[in-house]
Image (cartoon, rainbow, N blue to C red):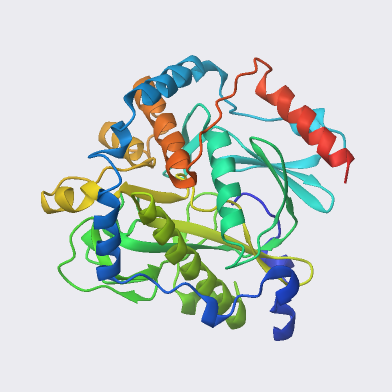
Length: 395
């Protein structure tokens, strides 16, 4: 995450007892309450059950709705929220930090996180996707609410469709990536490193003979260090050796990350989707409580596939139907070198609009609710300024 601030140098090593979350306020995570990872047989059973409640392809189940979203996205291509300047329009905001997707503003005891429409991959911004910021923000809000039984989070308020106000935390300089399948196309993806012959990755021993998009025998953690330029894979032992976290912190966060992913897998499959992999970020509040920060189970931070077509496509050697940005990643890899080319080709408009549809589709499928397309002609930045100003004045 670009924010929920706190550099490694500001992290305090607190006594073990200060890491405990009072059960009456923050729902302390106990090992006995952790969702159990789903076995292969359980996942298969749920996947088959999900097939009975969905059409052959969820992505084309409601063509008229899809057409409406594509049309709306096309009309918004020139009006995406690509940049914000709330430090110039909202009293009391300062110290803007620009991440790949989020613009973060310091508001004293809180942070104001604006989720823009910027689309990132390969450690750079590729395009702007209509409605994307709203989709990511509202998806995270839904998951934050649903996962409080696993871990507390930093959410304080959501004054606007694109905005979250959060508690300030000292964020651990590690992203916790959890994977249930071997796949991907980036330099740090599990399939990329496996295809290069690596069999021990981030402390995980991988067997011979794995095939791209195959389900792993168990979910695994593949952490990376946080970097402005390029994330670097790191093992748990290296996290401790580098002093990025204490053992108690690492154990607690690892357990929470695996529990969040197991729960996310279950919810996804109940709605006809496979949660393939994701990343989590955690921080420590002023009282020592470890909290989930940034985003959770969004199509930006996670990979999702359509469940009822996965097995047939996998057996046929065909890429799964994905509901995330992977197809846009693949387009750029086919048309340029996204890591080294100084100037990238412009993403085709039809792919940009398709990605907007898939993000909205994921939100509606997971939450079982209708995504509200913005209908006001008020410029997005003016709307955000008004809503954030009003909320902060009430604090």
